[in-house]
Image (cartoon, rainbow, N blue to C red; front, top):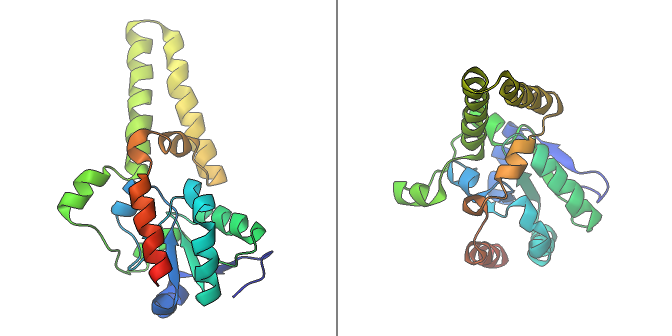
Length: 196
């Protein structure tokens, strides 16, 4: 599919037509994955890729591997990391957002599974940013005007996030215990990947 130095980007239509022949790896957190993922995608969070190298190498030897995230930024980073390990992969341009935007279905777990998974990362970021901005404004009004710097800092971070297509707040929130995969979940995913 690609040389280790140049990961390929597939658009949603290209990926949809080849979906049955691709091994799809979703590198988002378990919570994000549970909020909706490409049909048949396996969840290996980006911070767990190193542990999955043998299985990913085998998958790449059997056929093409497509890395997916919400926007394409994390999956692009995953492709570069895997390329350094000699594992050729592709990334989905625009991620699951572009996939859903093109009208393609996302698999979603049952209500019981969703309750275990929690909120998507995007929802967690919106909630945290909104709470911090509101807190900064309220403390600025009630305690001391200097607290309004908190709101300004969050606003600046959101602008930087949009301009760079990165999200520092998501990176921090991803480290919280409820967003980290359980080793049993990763073990089950790796077993499913080996069985393909």
